[in-house]
Image (cartoon, rainbow, N blue to C red):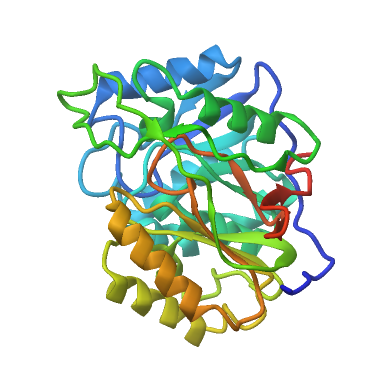
Length: 340
């Protein structure tokens, strides 16, 4: 059996309604200048869902990062302090999101909870806001990668985004989509073709058991970067979710060992592992065997192969809300409403 989480839950932001403003930000790398057509298609997709879209000040900046840490943080803070902006979505990930963490206005977010959405390197911002502002944040689609999909966002991605962020009820069981893709197309000249979809495998229960706790996690490499800082939340009683682009067992082992040294694994209620990006099926099998052996006697269930990483379609998952894992029923269930 897994652990049981503590009772105190983070604050929930208000849900999205038709006509609400979504702010687009670039906490790490720039997205729009790389593929302007894809960015415009993504913005139109969000508008087609009924929302107004407001571009952040760093949207069209070029370079490895979308500006200095001060500039990128200022872009986000402007939206967090604006009562008209109900959600903030990252354009894309990158590698430098952690540099902005000391500069974010966590007080503004705490006093006026705003929906924050992203994944990959944006894990740093999402978890920092859980830790510092005590609000629910959302591991989910980015503007460029998911909402800019050609010819339109994948239905599962769109439907999960809306179900999670517009309804003040728990989304319930997490269903694995029937089809998926991690095909890599170059956005600068292959953006006019749809990616091929393959049949999705069901999740693999590597360690049997059950457990309930707040969902916390994201990109494994980014989780490791937050180690030893005030921006890593308390994982006691949590369900740890992680995904990585790494296709080396030794690298993944190194990162997991670091989290263990930080105490992240000391009192988990469960573990959810995402499908690797462009990882051969043989590697996935090796990883699953390794994880099953590594966590066999830790007292929490482990389920792997969910489409929660660098592959599509992608669910929108609330970090800080309770998730129940039950290997007997083969069930992964969000049991808290994510928005108010």
